[in-house]
Length: 325
View 1 (cartoon, helix red, strand yellow):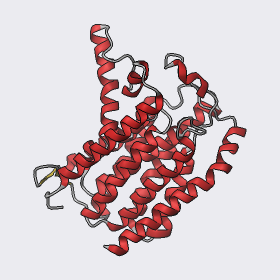
View 2 (cartoon, rainbow, N blue to C red):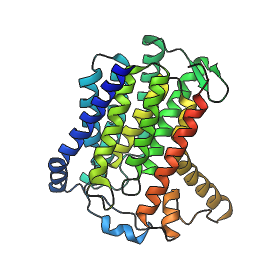
View 3 (tube, rainbow, N blue to C red):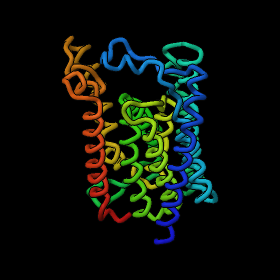
View 4 (spheres, one colour):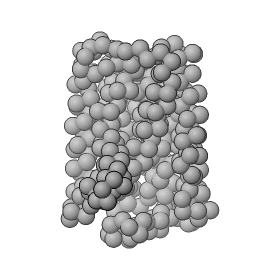
């Protein structure tokens, strides 16, 4: 156990260092490419000053995680499969960013195009897990000490988890440092889950993921010098969902990634309320914008959501305690 803990610290340190060292090179490069973030006209007016801030910084995170994982756990099929899912979802996000900021098509990829691509990645990953890794089709039910076998229904379930997590992180990525900080805590939580489930190679991957998020925060904290874009948010969501799938803790991800769930639900409830009653529940969705419009400063919102993420992680880990994993 001590050996794997030390290895995970190496993975985290490598990813942290790589991400920090990439900043002085990558940020000017993205600036020269003029891949600046466009800001919604209907968003908080304080965000208009962010227009032109380079995006697609998720490339820094992906590269850092890959290097940290390859050096420490490059011979592990499980760790490499998690990297594969992260890169695949990051590529979908990169394509979306490229269309929006380089080709200047504001809508980017169409929703159905994103969903089809995510579906294909999810299906391939599910077949890989069940057929080649022998993972089976059961999932752990938190707080019950039991698991439940979904059978063939596991495949659509996994695809839904991957899609939901990736898009949940994407919705959370709306304030400086928000998604990176929340994902740092989620990655830390899943590092502990990897230890609990004896998936020690995944421990290195989760540690690298957390280290990369921390390194990215050096440049992404308020006021941000670079945004991760869909490239980063999709990659982070795919990475967390992949780890949850390998460890059979997809249900626990709802708790560990509780901030993503809350942000997503705020959007869904806002749309349903407006379409059925013509009234909005929140001043603006996702939820972090609601608090901004209530007068909270951006750093205050971000710190509050970081704390909320930490508490959700503790709740998720508590739910897995004594489940026999």
